[in-house]
Image (tube, one colour):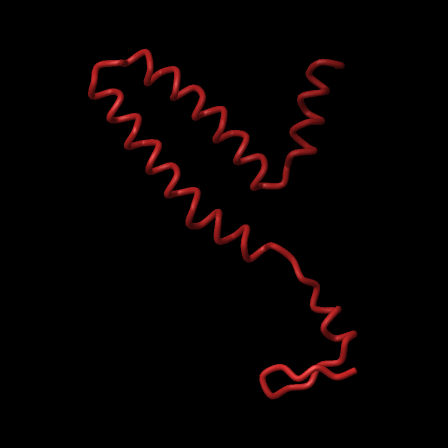
Length: 92
């Protein structure tokens, strides 16, 4: 079966060979949403710090750091390697 697309004709096998994925969406989220979230978190932290609640800023800062580490591991794709390293710390 031939499928017309933008004036060209592709056979079903050619369409299947293109390999659909989510790389475009992941890249867009990484390039647009993550910086926006970080900016929002920074503004909230400055607002809390301006009220004089330094302990609250420190608590949220540690939580933010842990979240950023988890996000970095998830985005980089090195989750299995990090898990193996942490397991080796325990098992020797």
